[in-house]
Amino acid sequence: MAMLTVPGNDTIDRENEKRMNDIFHFGTMEDVDKLGIFWKIRRCAWASCADSTYGHCTPSLGPFKCEQVTPWNIEEFGRVMFRPYCEAANAGIDLDIAGQGIVTAYIIQLVLVLFFGLCFKLTTSWIRTFGRMAGAFQQGSSLSEKCHEVQVRLSRTRFANASSSAMRDFQESQALFAATISITAIITFDGSNKAGMANMLSLFSWMFNHRILQGLITAGMYPVLLAQLLCQRNFYTLFFVILSWIFMAVITEFQDFNTKAFEKHLKQVSTVRSCGNMPGPMSFCQGIKEKENYEFFPITLACRYVVHVIVSCLIIDYVASFVKKHLLGDQAKYKQLGGTAPPFLSSWETKGAKRGLGIFWVLVGTLTMSMIFVSLIELLELLNMHSADGGVSTWAFGQLVAVAIWFPVAIKFLALNIVGPRKEAERSSDQIDGAQVELVDHSYRKIRR
Image (cartoon, rainbow, N blue to C red; front, side, top):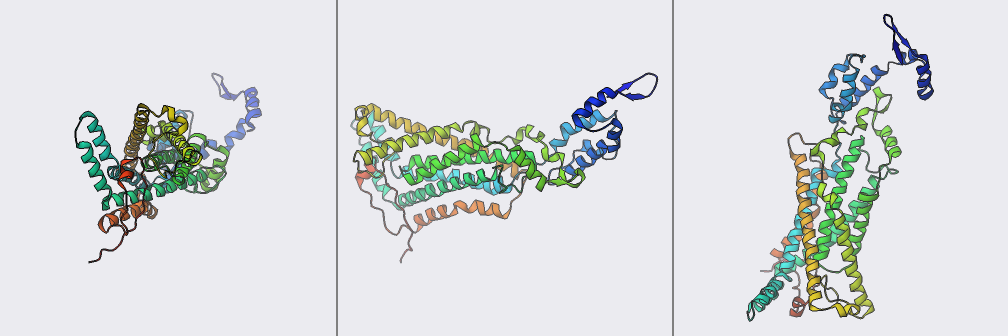
């Protein structure tokens, strides 16, 4: 825009000035100079970062609080605004989405499904299966019969009844929990809806909370899948598994960022007076995402397609079971996953095919448990961010409520072990020996002395 004639003063290139005015409509350079653009930018940038809601002002911006932007320091001013300014931005974590209580609740969920799953399988089939496997390598050994007897006795204990009841309650409650959280997440991050967006005052706050919620919902799918794999072919619980899976796919695969809607949201909740009652530059920072310690759920989200594969296997298994039961007259209520094939597949129902199908479901269960351990590690990393010195958030009342969400199931499990069920469950030996396993709900009774 300017030409320097030596010796002499700076002059304006009017041709370039006209071309720039045709694009930006700012008038002449004299008019631009009267606007005091850099003075307003300095005020706006400082006011935006001075509010602790958005973060803090980087020390490198300090000299520009009082000094004018000149041709000699404009390069330094641009460097400060390019990186250090936004690196001081607050992550804007929403306690209702990824607070300490929410993360702790997910950790408890993962631990409970592993514990209840272990107790349930020990009291229903694992001991008997171990005896059969050992007997296959030791001809004439009585180990198989002994393991079968131990399995039958164990399945009739108070501990077995408590494990069965707790697993059933946990399976239903976490399926409903996953579906509810997913629906809430879709509503919150829908650009046309304002629900749940009040605490998101910056662009990175949206990105950060959305990524954490994607990881939480994906991690929360694995205990739901493991419970369905271990327990039964129940359409009621499978329906919520499929529903949660669809919602998870919407959030992780199809939910895009609505630029216009979020800009409108910022103009309503994130205005800065020194910026003309518009959102300040701190609201549009993204530089903090370049820090490695703010990258959460890298493996869980990268391997989210594992959920799609496992759910597809569950659907295929249920369809085959439904055809066998309702169209071909099988009267069995519940069967283990990968049980006897329908008659139209009877030609494939050989000993080797059954063994291969059993191995397949074991691998599916092992894969699910592996992803649970991965998700558990990444959840602990997220929790460490909260509890570390200078953590990004603190406990609130809602976080305490979130932690207590799984307490009823755990308390009932303990009560059934201590007090005992109201009525002892009757399981015949053929149910334990065969593939048929039905979960029974129990309520506790007081001990009479």
